[in-house]
Length: 87
Ligand SMILES: [Cu+2]
Image (spheres, helix red, strand yellow):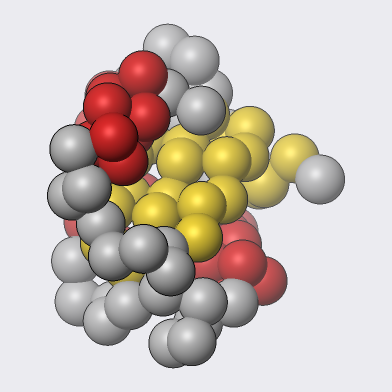
């Protein structure tokens, strides 16, 4: 998990019941790809943080497990077929 997210947890930025999903993401070729994936989560309720980094090819998602599942998050990332989550 990214240090930025760990720090945010320590600062209690997210609710106590927040869950995290950290995954490798294949298919990103530039920073815009990372931004594109992040933007997909802007209108998704129950996602507190969508942190995606192109250089590392990784994303960490902080979410409310009462509102959505990690499988739903993976489906949003893979929507459209440009990116693939490494399982
Ligand atoms: Cu790109």
